[in-house]
Length: 65
Image (cartoon, rainbow, N blue to C red; front, side):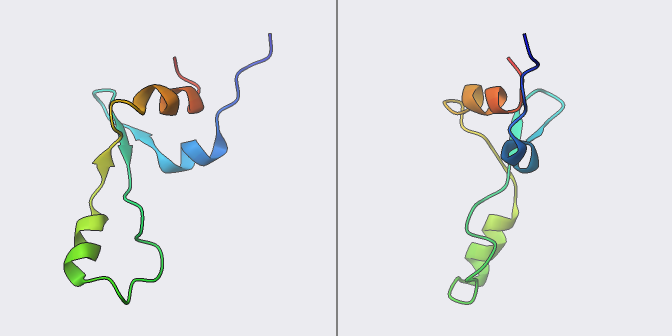
């Protein structure tokens, strides 16, 4: 059997925490920022965790079981 390949986009976007949870960044923080309020941009700065329903699919993309 060939080795399982990691999804290149996923490995750039997600990171594992020490307890095994998956960190992610918020969307809508890259461009068209002039129409967004300071408060909205500030709240998008913080990292979040991947929702529990999506953890399995993200782990598969990262080459984990």
